[in-house]
Image (cartoon, helix red, strand yellow):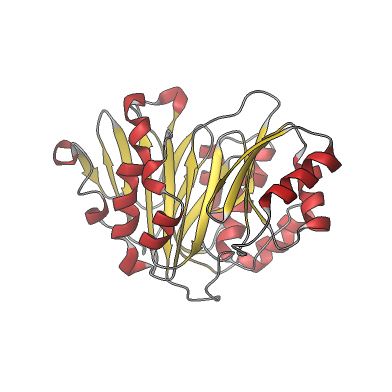
Length: 309
């Protein structure tokens, strides 16, 4: 079944409250997805030439100091970092490929969760409230955030199988539904150089978008193409460094609701996830139409781009 939620702030004054506003949204969807949860927060952006890497490891006794020291020594790159429960966030000028290769050779049990200038992805097994508390979600700052509560249907319960999924810098996706042509698309994307970490169909959807955007398409253009190329049932919420998007398949079997005020845009599988947001009583609330792309980006923070049939 699964639950998806997203919050995009149009009013920068709310950014210190992003996590506090979002946590009740995520937790309210626990009965749609009680076995694991995750979220991607955008904020704390690094400067030009820098990248931010989020790593996770299931071993609570892992010596992160030693791991970061090894990375610093072998890559000859300064690394600023901090720990958050079972995760660390690294900020460095090291190249993504070098970090990936070092982890594969020296710390294969440590998962690279996200790469970009803004994004941090944190996820884990357990009730969504436990996951939120583990990573101090309520204390987080930022401009936008998307999240997912999972009820596993086609694969086992694991951190790796939890959403969000990412396959490109600062891009991630959460998904309610299932894709029927993901195996064929996976083969096509692998030939294009995409590397997958799971057999989850949602990772294929994320890879599809990042591959098209790597060829110069906008987020809107990539999502418009997805309407024709992705078979199955889906409601997607997508995050990028610049914005936030929602798309339902042309049949719209999976639920979704949007709410917008002058201060924010919020999305959820059910309205009750939005009920505690400030000013929600005066928000424009609607069900996104089938096969229509909804995008909000920093360059148009006060308005929505809307395309589709």
